Length: 171
Image 1 (cartoon, one colour):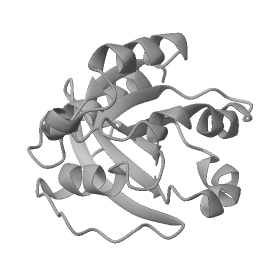
Image 2 (cartoon, one colour):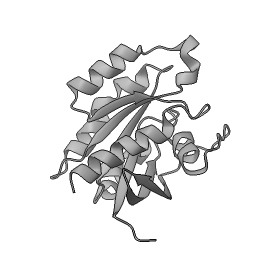
Image 3 (cartoon, helix red, strand yellow):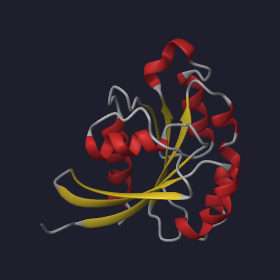
Image 4 (cartoon, one colour):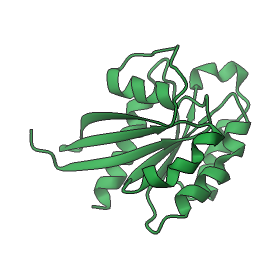
């Protein structure tokens, strides 16, 4: 298969925010509830088609724990886009957004970022209103905002396709 593009994307956010289940749901269309904590970084690839273009995504899923953050600058080199993920049921996961952005914005080239609120199926115990997530995305200059659920699959593929569309438009 001829590819129109290959993009390295990074998935960032605090430990437990749902990055690995998001990546697994996107790759396999299955929800794996008992994922292990990511140590350092996990790597996945998936070929998708967006607007008639065939694209390979190389997905780098970062361990969200503070102790892994020192490796982040090395690993995000060459990334062409990113998803920052927070957990809508856990306020601190969005409160730490600026710490993550400092690492990314320390790079010479700016990459498009999508803000994704995970665990949307847990609306009943939500701590971060949808409107607040959307407002933060606009204030911080994210290219797009969505809430998704890796459990139900809602908005998972759409989040990756939105980022891919933005990266294609910048090629």
